Length: 228
Image (cartoon, rainbow, N blue to C red; front, side, top):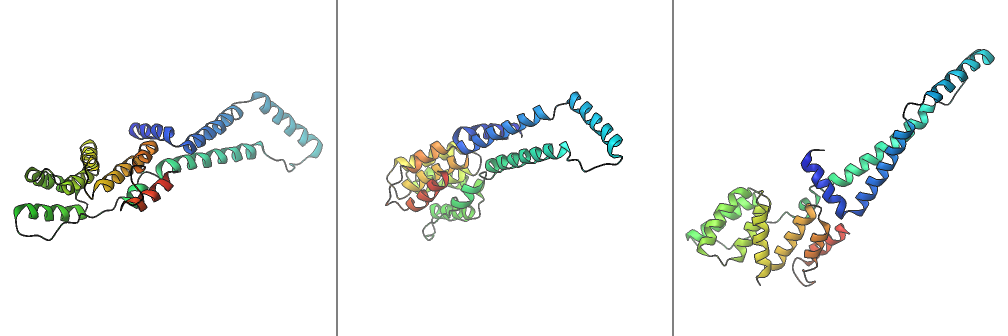
């Protein structure tokens, strides 16, 4: 693993009991292999003696079950466990965002002023997933209307996709702290970000903030089920 992958893997172990159990089982099997496959000179001598006496008493090679079959079987088990371990780690790398993170930016029809033009352009880029182009447009818009929860919400989402995660989360938390229609969508997207990072504890804590009658409740329940 690359250093950054190792850090993510170690973080995932703290939040995924099944992954930690799989790792423990893999280590146990590989330790057994290491012990049993180490050079054994007495076993080699015994094998030579058996082969010598077989040639004397039977004159031809008989059917003998090879020790290698046993070790090959154990090796296969270890390989399977390693595959399962890596699959559990990497399979969650994009699944949550891919399943729940595809949203579109909806804005009112253009009325012809500069502010609306900024929003229309931002929506166009956002829906094309050109998130780095969205942020400067919404930055400019928010200078004229700093109270716009819609602009904060979509800028926050765009930022989480553009590498400026802390800024994005800050925007989303501001939206959650308000009382707009985007309040619980912001909470859900924060939870989704943490789920993507395999921080199950933090993701679940944000999902619990979404009431059953919120528009985001259905997908929040589905994500919570996936995280359990």
